[in-house]
Image 1 (cartoon, rainbow, N blue to C red):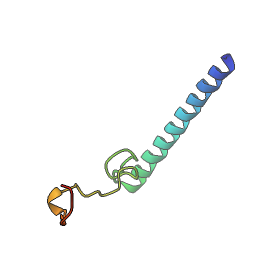
Image 2 (cartoon, rainbow, N blue to C red):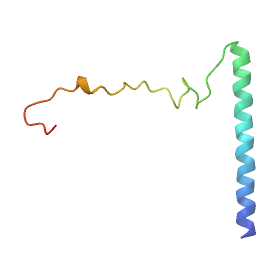
Image 3 (cartoon, rainbow, N blue to C red):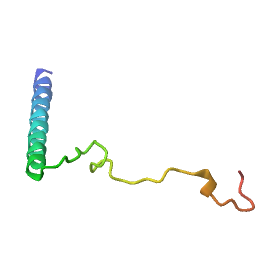
Image 4 (cartoon, helix red, strand yellow):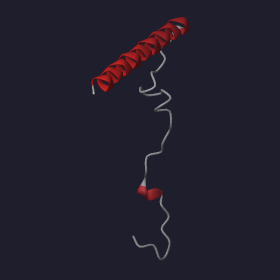
Length: 68
């Protein structure tokens, strides 16, 4: 049980190290570009890049036989 806990703690430490490394590289790239770059979870980042159209019920074409 103690070995599993040690592996979990070690994994968390390594992931925090990767996060710090990524943030450092991101800040260096922003400094080199002289512009603000969005983080993946911010608006405009690769996780939020999809432009989704807001659903509008008035755009739906209803046909005879639709159960609405």
